Image (cartoon, rainbow, N blue to C red; front, side):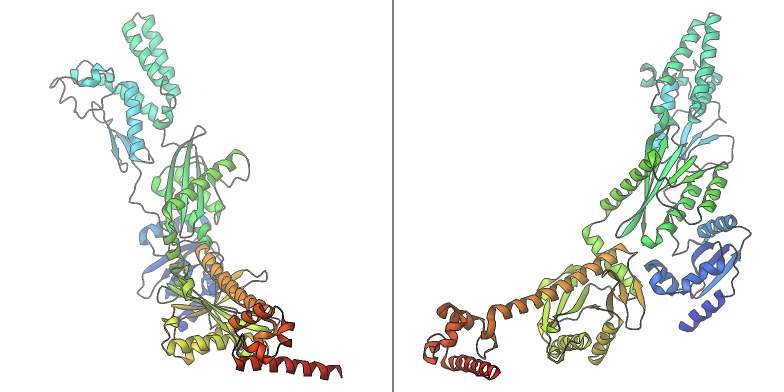
Length: 618
């Protein structure tokens, strides 16, 4: 594996600094990732650099690369188009893919029939009929059909004309004034077809031109004394004008502006698209993206734009974005090629457009909160940690260790345990470090603590069983290598990592004993988990250290006497009141409170102190 990796790195050096597409393959030749580049050499070489710069998804992908191909193109735009085609063709495992099975419905108008009908289809075909869409949902498409049919009194039943003319009585819609009832045979195919053409004009958004034409026909009918015909036209004009806000429903496929926002949650990302018509919010769509992190945000938004509008085959005039995407000019050119007209891409910083994007982001956050539970976030954080570090099993139990001392004295060690990413406080342990008597040495202290912990496990002590799925050491490479040495001595092969901090004392990442560092700042779930563990183990160590210090102050010299514990110290202080009174008491007086042997130790201790003081003063 290592030799193959080095071979691929050498191949990268010979790649051209030209635009193109690169195709990553696994051991069996399967395409696992397709990407485009402005300069192939620069982009592909990034995959074979430091692991700390990669997101968990990229780390997994790189670990599976066994070969790659490239295709050089003339321009960056050609590379983008080719990339999109190859993603559709191969559906690579590590590309961000949108699900195409949902589809976007179209309205079909069968103008090829004597009595045209409306229906919903999944995609248009090349025939003599008219298609409108795509609409954001089947409901939106049905609403559009219902709106134009109600305004123009077109049929909504399932009868087929002219076959069913006169066969049955007219339905209730005729009596309610909602249908001109072609089933009665009182309206010709030509007149009915004219109304359908008016419906088509409405679906096209040409209501102003339609109203103008109808008013002209109405005035002409009135001048020619065809008052009944003029009244019919008048009613149709009123019905079309009465559509009002419904007109937005009719032309839902022709959004003037889309606001596209990407928000990263702890376990997944979410893209929201808000569709605006005539300056007003009309509809919302959202897509949840699993397996992406903050480091993938630019790629995720760019991939969404290309695939979403290619699937939808309909473009607004303006697309607002919550953040820039890679090679925004090429993406804009790609969307323009789909729309066959200029499409504006913008990342607004202020004003009304900025407010629209903030609203889209708010909707995306709400969708993430709706689907993410606290349990799911915890499990996902462990899965991401496993993927990032390459651990073979899910690290459901994590043990973390830290050393604390005060001016080189009272050195202590702390062990905290997290189960399913939650503190298991009943399993916390603390250690008073003996090696500290020889001077401050964090490495020696860590070695002593881990040795004692593993020895207790080896001896079968239930308080130290079982072992965790991974060890986390508060410290850098030196500390984690000490930990690995101790684990090896006991025959333990469990993974261990150091929790390293930056210059501002904030969690920076994890480091393995072999020196590999894993950056976690771009993975919110892992960053939050490791940060919390590091703070907890440090807090536990500091708390123990301070408790020892305060105990020494409270107990004064009594704690240094053999046989005097917390209870006997308190009994002596309660009876005699002060240390001075205890020092002046006889053995017989002390024996009334503590055993005589302990009373003799107390008396001998203070007599020795007195002699030492006299020697120092002489």
